[in-house]
Length: 497
Image (cartoon, rainbow, N blue to C red; front, side, top):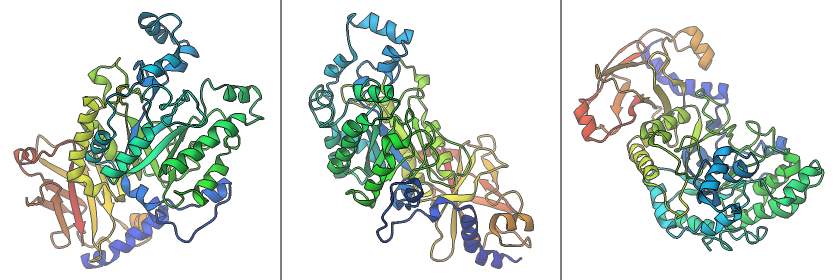
């Protein structure tokens, strides 16, 4: 088929492919007329994903609490010390604290005297993130707001003597366009109501009735979070947590019903099955296209979500690794949620700030291929390694922009061959991928129908040639690239009209 026919069929081909695979971009939409959802998964799973979340792509996660005081091991300090009796934690306490020291005494040292919500908000804005999620309560039960159900074990009664959630939510909304969300752990390691419910084989729900549900409602009604990031669910089924009931209220009657999104941790067996987006597991990055919207929550400190001092430089992700995680996730229809652990003083360590600012600089140049993008027909190049693809929605003239992210710079040659349309185009593949025969009678990528630019070097003409589906690209001189500060991954925008 002639090239002109390809031009006419390309948009239809993409639409047919997307419909075939049911990619989430098809269902990511602004909710239409008000729908009432029933408190069961069959009904709740029908809710459309609010468009803002799919377009945002990048979020910041904050694990902050009493565990930030010992700053040792991980945010699971209390249970590792008292439940699991981990020798390293026991030795740490023996060497540094009096014999009868309790975990509760750490709360008095959780002072947050240097916490400045505005500084945090400005950093997150500059990082290029589009949403932020703060731990309102982790598994130790300590809340970062004056919970009516957590007397004496919250940030206003002890420690900072401040409503951390209120301050950060206000700063984020004032200083940026970021969406504000809250993490909430369902269970608590040592809460007597929870342990008693477990002793009764979860046949009673005193912990849910008196602690979980009042706090969930209080958080939503008081702070209006647009992300509810549930966790700590795995020791009980969703029916015990009454998760379906809460989500039905959240989607039907809550003040954030139109825009709120939730994850998939609502009771054992719900992960990767129910929720507006799937987490599936910590640091989940399957590397292949997922039909349902998903999120890769990962830590800049490779092993801990909370801040700790028992680290070396090798324990932190490099900026290059962070960018690679963003690219490989977004190419496969995911979002990234990048975790930072603030210190007990309320500060964010310089190494975390460095990674976030590097990310912000990269996204300022390359975000065009990230924010609001959709998966391409191929997520990565199967011929040339470490090249990943996204696409933008078709423009009014029917053009399609494909973004090729090159993660490994071709230092030896300064040239690269990529295959954004796959290795071969033939009738079998056309039918399989698109249901349309686009033919094989000519080069699809050619100087008349195709434009190639390098993001950040738009004023520099890129030299390129084609041989059927192979696109041979000559990079601009490396010193010119370095002068522009382009690093970590290099993006070519391939526009086909």
